[in-house]
Image (cartoon, rainbow over all chains, first blue to last red; front, side, top):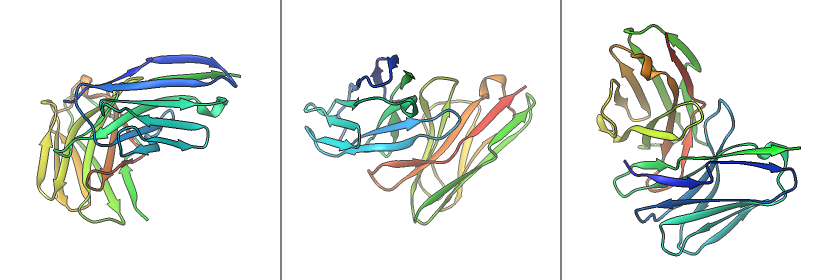
Length: 110
Length: 111
């Protein structure tokens, strides 16, 4: 299946710091999505991106659709303890497969 | 509004026993449906997806199978579970080319 690589794999940051993570693919995506997963729960959609170069915000979260359509970035400003979780990028493929990235685990230290 | 239900939430099964996990979606028609497996602390591995009744595509050859007997019902099965089948199983739905939405997941432990 499709491989979406996320980096970093894990992050340990102090509360109040900004966070940046990215996702890369060997294939072009027409849609990029970012999800957050809390322990023992299903992932929840945070931001959806539909056009190359698009920059979209949702509160303290900002995501960008890379101009090559093979990457995307997620930034979290002024992190808080409830930002803890695993963040996944994802994208649908023309064959209706829906692939997820390898995940970035975020720990926020109060 | 659309909702997705997945059950059971947790399951402990002996090696060699059968498995049946069910997922249903409400509030939408002809959704794309997906089964994922997630090992502890790892990413989501796409197992099966379906674009319509009776249409199943398998991503990874394994000890599992999927069926879609009704438009909004997706079932994950196994005839004989292996220890390696343990994990967190997630069902999801999406409209065509749009974002997907997840159920709450089933924690399967094979002992």
